[in-house]
Length: 159
Image (cartoon, rainbow, N blue to C red; front, side):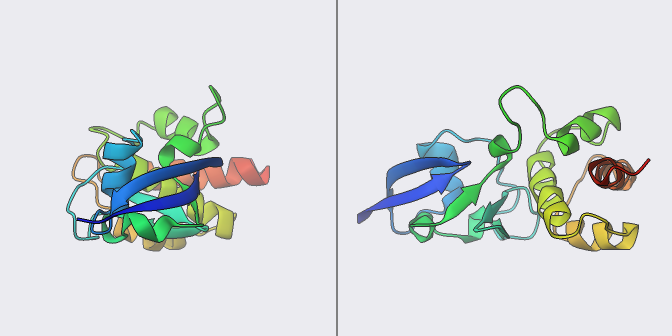
């Protein structure tokens, strides 16, 4: 085991840590940095529960090594709210009851935020396609899709 020093930015804050070169970013976030929002659902990149953004690119943190974060800008679900003020997506997920057990919710929120940053006016088909990598075993997807669509409309100032 060789530990490597990593300097990165996570949720806007400079962060340094030591990690084994074989350790995933998911493990670093959860076990070393106590950022437990990203969840391990599958460990193979199939479920999206561990979604984060790396330099504004949506990534499954279970497929990324912690050492790969060197010099990168990482955003997790913990970085969505501004202090006590929830992100509009988080508010809509509550309003629409678009969550249940909470395993998939952080990854879906990160993925939806990534979509809306790239495409502020997505069609329902585009939302469904973008979120296809995020699996939910509890809710079905209609409430999630409606929450994302309504958030997009609100953020554009549409009614």
